Amino acid sequence: MSEQDRIFIGGGGLDYAVSQDLKLKYANRHGLITGATGTGKTVTLQILAESFSTQGVPVFLADVKGDLSGLAKAGSADFKLHEAFTSRAKTIGFDDYGYDAFPVTFWDLFGEQGHPVRTTVAEMGPLLVSRLLELTEAQEGVVNIAFRIADEQGLPLLDMKDLQSMLVWLGENSKGLSLRYGNISRASIGAIQRRLLVLENQGGAEFFGEPALQLADIMRLTPGGRGQINILAADKLMAAPRLYATFLLWLLSELFETLPEIGDPDKPKLVFFFDEAHLLFDDAPKALIDKVEQVARLIRSKGVSVFFITQNPADVPEDILGQMGNRIQHALRAYTPRDQRALRAAAETFRPNPAFDTADAIRDVGVGEALVSTLQKKGVPSVVERVLIRPPSSQLGPLSVAERKAVIAQSPVSGLYDKTIDRDSAYEALARRATEAASAAAVAEEAEDEQPMAVREYSAGRRYSGTRVSRSTSKSRSDSVGKAFSKSLARSLGTRTGSAIVRGVLGGFFKAL
Image 1 (cartoon, rainbow, N blue to C red):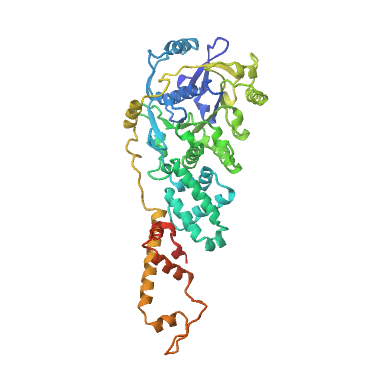
Image 2 (cartoon, rainbow, N blue to C red):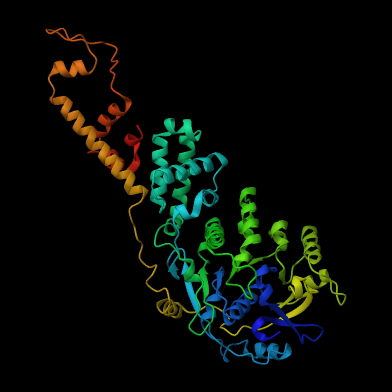
């Protein structure tokens, strides 16, 4: 097999001279990178990203610690670890080792350290929105109703204010809607609105809107044939872990839903690294776990390879873990009985090597070493090997602020996502309905006021004797509920409440009557 068909991971065997490779043909069978903090997972991620890019495979990864921006800059001989790197390269037979920079595009949900990343509320869908907001089953039901009615009435849900306006409309029309869609509790709507406010305060509102991310922009190749490395700035994002996990799951889902089937390609079309993967599964409902399992099982036929990165294999559900054919296990620590059980469980997932005890090796490997097993001929896992990971060619450590800004300015997507587009959507449509309804109510009231008393009394259903009017003391007027409410709305237009109504607080109440 030629070097063009494989990715060199490092050297194995007793003297680390045996090449350990990940074959591109089996790279889309997914992978797992695990190990305790400080054992070298980030460097392993860096060298895999470099290698995939060199082989013409685009990469998407999250930079949780802020260290991976160095992929955009070549390493240098004056780096303090230069001698250690060159010595390691010699030990493992990495004869053509040298320093190099790689094509990088920076992204940031907050638009601060990279190009803004957005999607619409509609594209996110009710399941992921509910997951993002940590809603109960009843609250999730309300969100599903909001999405359904928005779709039926042609009300695009693009940004957060669209969803907020739609929820208010549901609350104002809950009685009539509940007969068809099920109970719509105002308490549930209030709870959802509070969750949206929390998300907005965390900066999550910037994620919803347009222009939405185009998948083609993360699957670019350079003119020279290298794969673009897309780096999501996630150091600040980790303060909102549910937003981080939901965004990455949404991106996976979009890839799954959008990309065509291509069968079993010679190499992946995209490699997706999901760092801190435990955040995806912590307290996740079964419906969400089932969705992740489905995506992981089927997305490889779309040419997408997924690598989960976490501290312990136990962080990943078994049904999903079973699909991770390529595994790189850095050291695990076993200070407690629970840690020891987890270590033994991790060892049992590897095909044993008679040369050493796997459980002992997981505990004993040093920084920059790992136990590696990759898929070989016919997709069979190789015997686990103790491997010295190859050194990176790009800079180890982050870019300076000025260097990052220069890379962003020269990006192939520079200027495409920088400015938000606020087109006509649910918020504006509901505001127009309220304005039109308020105007109609004002005209109706003015016309009624101009009618003679006798006509007004007669039209209200009261008896008219020609000389005196008989009035009922019970105030049982027969105005419809919609008409009475219209009058109240018209009188309040000059107040703060009235202004809020015009902005879409009541939405299309009158249209629904």
